[in-house]
Length: 182
Image 1 (cartoon, one colour):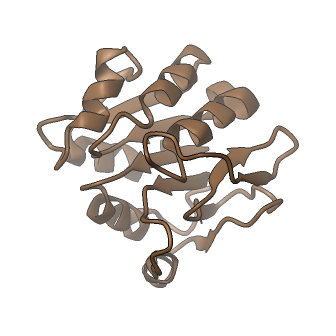
Image 2 (cartoon, rainbow, N blue to C red; image 1 turned 120 degrees about the vertical axis):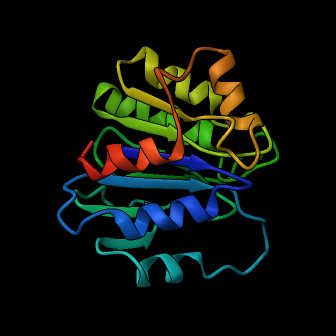
Image 3 (spheres, helix red, strand yellow; image 1 turned 180 degrees about the vertical axis):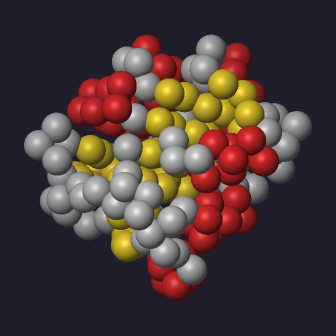
């Protein structure tokens, strides 16, 4: 399972990754990107039209399937259940964000632990840092975008400062890693 979290400054990177991943990537990819509430977005349509993998926005109780890309919906926190499906939660925003990267990363740690790879990209707050640390402590592979490559360095810096990232990689290194099938 590949988890991708980001906020301000991460949209273009996520879009490039979606275009890059091969149709036979053979992993579940979950994208958690901060979006404004009550703001219509066609991110799912844009990503789906440019993806070689099956891609859709998550709905409550959707099964988690292999070789698919899922995008966390706006105004909900996305949880991964041990029984292999998604749950959507309407509780309060965390770090002013819903979906919260921390919520998804922490539920992935609880449900799938070391079978996860998580990458935290650019963002203007600390969301994702604690979740990345929890994943690392469960044996997952955790990566933070190098702050010098991030448009907004606060999010990767927060993860790095609490030792949540096993690796700190430049954007080109992240793309190379994913092209090689991690």
